[in-house]
Image (cartoon, rainbow, N blue to C red; front, side, top):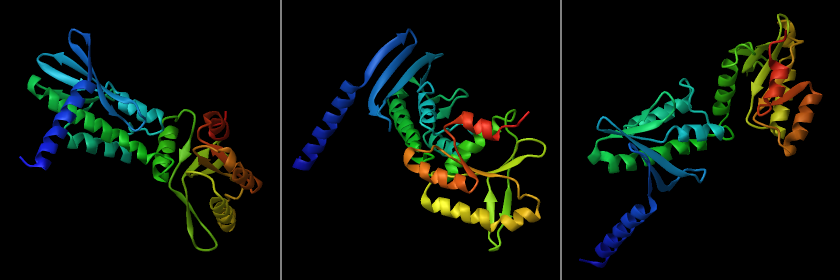
Length: 267
């Protein structure tokens, strides 16, 4: 046996020993066993699994923690019409894993299949957790999905229209993400952006000026314009103040009270 082959054997033995020592097993009940694996998700949390025995079949589950944890960090995978949900299902289908109605990620196994299923499910949970890298701070379309889902789930509070655009004197068309109906006669245009910047301020002021004649010709000249961003940190407040001087209000999405005060249906 050559030196490389010997090293590979030792590495394999050390890896198996590490896995054996690092996995923690704890009986929860007569039919339930908890496993704390040595692997962590992108948030530094240990990946834990629960094995439940019923009618000779072992169900191995994360108990819904993975999807809940992603949502608590701003990545909601539960909207079945979103790209995120499609990404989630692609990962689960590829790894022959199931998603329960309550959001648990599940693998099922016979007694002999348990070790492989534990390994496969652990890798699946790591892949799902990695969807955090599609966070709304990185991708406008993902943040827009979050905003869109929120307003559609609050139909008793908000009345929205979508699909509108305006044409500028430059012959350019500008999309409007939302038109909010505040009262029978009062509306508000709203667009969604990831963050504020000097370039965005200049762009928005230019768009609003470019579409002035169009808005007047369509009797839309008095409708105010607001933008939604995830938050307004201190270093971006100067941009918010600049826009407000041009009657463009900035609404931080993390302040739902402010969003509701400015955009909700008025009695």
